[in-house]
Image 1 (cartoon, rainbow, N blue to C red):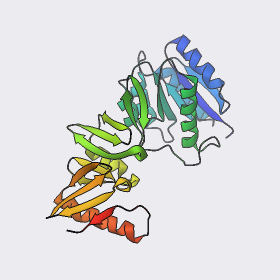
Image 2 (cartoon, rainbow, N blue to C red):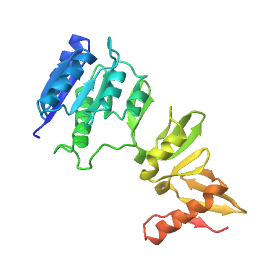
Image 3 (tube, rainbow, N blue to C red):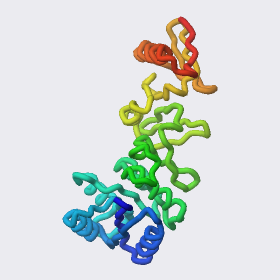
Length: 260
C-alpha cells in the first residue's frame, strides 16, 4: 500500500468539497472518494471491497439526512475489516459517541488543516503505514474531553488517577482534571492493560504515578503528588503485593512503602 484510500461523507456539498480538497492535499493520501449520505457511502465502500481496493478510512459527518453518521459508524464497526472512522462535525456533543465507537479522531468544523493532518497521522498509525510512529494502533485509552468549547483527546498515559462521580468519572492529570461521561467500571476494564488498578470503589490509579503507599493501624492510603487516596481493605493486599513484585523486578522510581 502506497497511501491511504479514504472516503469523505457529508450531505452539504460545499463542506464535502472543502474536506475532499484538504484530504487530496495530504501526500499520505492516495485516493479520495466522496458520498453525500450514508446510503451512498455504503455503496462506495461495498464497491471498493468488490474491486479489491477497500477504503482505509472514512471521514464522516454526523448530522446528515437519512442515515446519520453515528448510525453509519456503528454499521461500519460490524465490517469484517472495518475502515477507520474520523468524525468531522460542527457539533461537540457527539464526542462521547466517537469514543464509544473507537473513532480515530473527532474534528470540529471548520476543519483546520493542522488538525486534519493530525487525524491523518492517527489513521496512518492505526493502518501501520510509514508515516505512523511505528507503535501500531492509536492509544485505545484516548478519551475526548471538552475544554472551553474545544474537544481534545486525553490519553491514559496523561492520567494519574480517576475519581468516580456518579455515572461520570473525573480524570486527574498533571495539568488539571476533566469530567467525562463514562463509568469507573468501564475505565477499569479498558485501562487495566495500561497499568491502572482499582484501589477503592471510587478510585482508579495509575500504578506508575504512585509516590508512596502508607499503612497505619490497618488504614491504607496511596499518595500521588500532593493527593492522598484511600485504599479499601479488599484492595490493600493486592496493591501491596503488586508494588512489591514491581520493586523486585528492579524498576526505578518505585513508590515508597511504609510498614504497618
